[in-house]
Image (cartoon, rainbow, N blue to C red; front, side, top):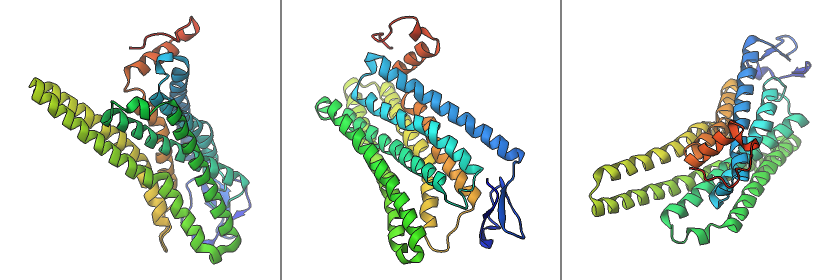
Length: 328
């Protein structure tokens, strides 16, 4: 943090572990403690894992022709968003930890925030698009290929990224207006800060919950039909457990990462509600870590992705043309 950044006296009791405040001048200075160094090393390691995991997905889908499907194009878009989170948002947020952004918003802080909001929203909306794709694949399999084709997927991806950029622009404009007019336009700033989370999180979550509930009910109904036909209770029980496990992991991990952050953000919009700086930042890192877990959830569960990863990691991809390889 650059020296000379002053804070209000009300912020003295809510100081980040990497900072210290001169109690006479109320100037914030950087505190290069061992905790801060370990924190940066840990976050840097997470960034590397995010980049490597999502890079494997991107290379697999682009290179292997077997993976050129509508569903995988949505996963590709998700991987690109998560990769950029690891490349841009994580390093910039690490700089945020040891910079003055917590107390003074300069150009760097606004750039960091725009990347954060855009890519995080894109990641969430891509997850929502994948759930829509899965709905048609499971609940309407006969019309799936006509309703979810490459052209439809491209439109979904373009809409996803466009909404993400618009949400980020809305946050930036709201922040600039709040700095200019202070209390005079507080209502409009509050409205913008409410609409952002609604379109970038709460609405997609409601859509995903409804879709996955519908998928789960359809899977149970199909399992009962198989049970009535084959009388194979063991096989049906296995199908039910697998469907339950998959949907639980998908929504459970997503909500575990993102729900605390957005609830905290929403509570802070209320009057006289403040959250400690350290808690707010911890929840932000927890939310961003979803980009690290997405490759495991949406790719590692599929055997053909695991086969593609083995070919890439072992270097076989450089030893010949494996683009038409049959992935098992």
